[in-house]
Image 1 (cartoon, rainbow, N blue to C red):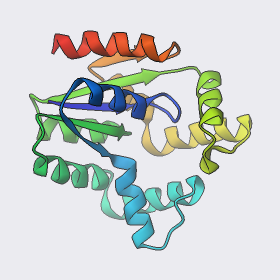
Image 2: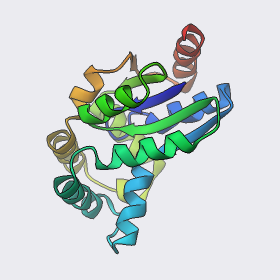
Image 3: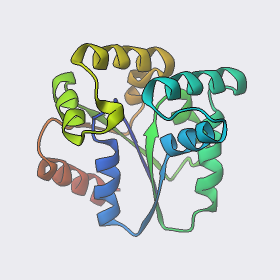
Length: 180
């Protein structure tokens, strides 16, 4: 099985992957890591703004499926019975994954209020997350413009309201994982 997450920054995509990793013998892949690796190879800063511009340029030059195709290549090399993928961003990402893995691919969309997501990124205290609420909202709008995250979320197999506690999230993920 391939479980993947989609959602906006601070929605809990990596947390879901970590929790599912506790449930299963799994290998993990973060699509954002692929982007950061390529950016570093090109001498581009991995700070949020330059990385977003770099991603936009790479996708414009190589097609909107560039990074997801690289992810598919890596997934095909993985041996674990469960693969966990964080960072599905576009509807095209979803379509490529469903085509490559028609029976194995499960997409989980995470919905969280902007206020809660902003609070979460402030708590994780990453340098890239040191932004004002206005900048955070602008970044959301830019991510939606570039990637169409909301459209990718609409294509999910499961939708989770992740405004609650980690315990709440674990409970929902247990139900999902046992139903598959």
